[in-house]
Length: 280
Image (cartoon, rainbow, N blue to C red):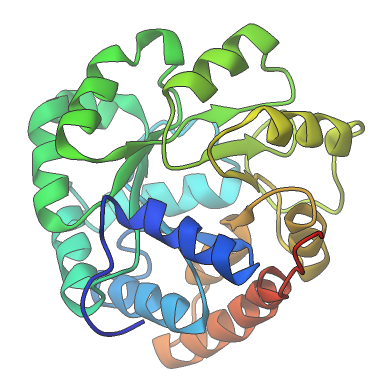
């Protein structure tokens, strides 16, 4: 996208409003900040946007990413080895924002590293750098009041995860206080590429979508165009992480790696961009 920033309230909200008006679904890539390098991260983010990505989840590294599979764990470890700290991470956010006025950026991490930096202080810095929201994987809704208040004050969205095992009571609470979008986990367990969906997934996702007043997207294990197509038929978008991150860990020159990533991303983005005709 180009031109002046479209940000009447928040870029995440603007992106989903645009997609709804176009009859399309969201493609949300997750990439690990700093892998394979800081400049490469910025270039990849901009390439993904150019190919049609709608929201970027930018992973802030943590030494114990318990919800992640081996690929994202390896990427977090690599980022820490490369020296990705808060200043470096926010520098990448700032560099992406300088070249892309409209791409929504979600700070994706765990509570521990953000809490250590100070929730409000880091949120203020993230907002100033150009971030639009937070997703802290292990922050339960029952303990999120402080972060929710901070995000509300700063016009940042706070995104929660919901799983097939989430109780109706917890789901109601998440849908009441969450914003931006709901990230629905396609299966129990950790992240990583999968060949299929968990039994009962479609029925549960349909019920969650019916109950939600904010967009619902699906992630964890989405790695093929067919899987993107399947979830986009049931909700508002798909999140792809490990399939992209795995390739950033390969021992290849950046031009070749970038070309491979762009080819893969284009194939995954295409099913989300099929215009869905409104029901009469």
